[in-house]
Every structure is written in C-alpha cells, then in structure tokens.
Image (tube, rainbow, N blue to C red; front, side, top):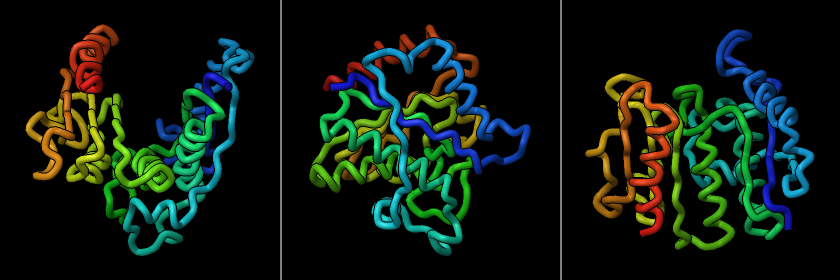
Length: 224
C-alpha cells in the first residue's frame, strides 16, 4: 500500500485577478517546492488526479441558489471532487493517508450557497464528509481540524447541529480578522453541544504557539 496519496489541482481557469492571492500560481508555487524537495520521487508518495464532483454529491451538502449551473464553476467541482478522490483512496485501501492540494478554497461556504463567501463557493471538506457517510454509513463519526488563519465559519454553519462531526477551528481572533466569528462561546447546537471547538489565537501567533495548542488542546480532544 502507498503511504501517502497526493491529489493535486492548480485551478488553471480560476483566479480573482492576476495579482490577487487567490490565483492559480498559488498552488503551482507549492507544487514546484514539492518537486524541488524530491517528494514526488519518494517511493511512499504517489500523485493522483481529481475529478468533477457530480450534482448529486454537491447537493448532499448544499442548497445552491439560483442553480448549480449558474453558481458553480468547473474549478469548484474539481476542487470538491478532489477531496472525494482523496477520501476514496483511503477507504478503498489504495493509500494509508491522503493529502488534497486544491483550490478554490471552501471553508467559508455555508449550507445555503448563493454566491461566494470569502472566495468560497462549495465547502470541499463538508462535501467530503457527506461522501464518506454516503459510502460508510450515516452514523460515521468524523473530526475536522481547520488550521487556516480565518475562522471556518461555513464548516461551522454546516455541522453546528450535527452530533456526529467534531469541528475544531484554530484561527486568528475574530475581532481582528474576517469573518469576525469563531469565539469560544460558539460550541454547537442543542443536540451537538461541545462538538464545535473554536480556538481563537492572537494575531502573529507563530509555529511555536500553534504546536503548543495542537499538543495541549487539539490532540487531547481528539483522543477523547
């Protein structure tokens, strides 16, 4: 069995503008670094291609207004489909671990989609979770750990009342950064209280601070 499967998609047709951080070069730079480090030559790492997420796979998670074909571009479908490919690689026993290196992003996309929120249209990780449940059973329990600087407000919206999903978000304090949410008081709905864990951090928190939070807070929660 391959140790790590890397699903890669640079979103060649997707960019906010030529000089905006959300553009296709962002992943190409990352891929160049991976190649320079020789990771693709490592015998335990294999690269895989994504596919388009189908209407059915998207609509398990989202209500899309005014319609899928009006709101969702091909690049959004490929990014979402890439997470599905990554999950299938693991559950089909082809790889031990999977890493999906994909854009456009997704964690600001809510259950109801009627345009872009924080450059996100489809919530890629939520679509992957619902795909896993479709294949393995609705009672599957899943943990999501989001380490982006911005609070994963869309993922929180989707799973806030879901007792089967533990959602942990480490992010910069919402009083200082978009989207202005992700406080410790946001802990889940009545049937899923405690399943949402927000860890707001001071601006400028570096590697040492992140590692400390992972070791002292996140890992103990996951072990429970």
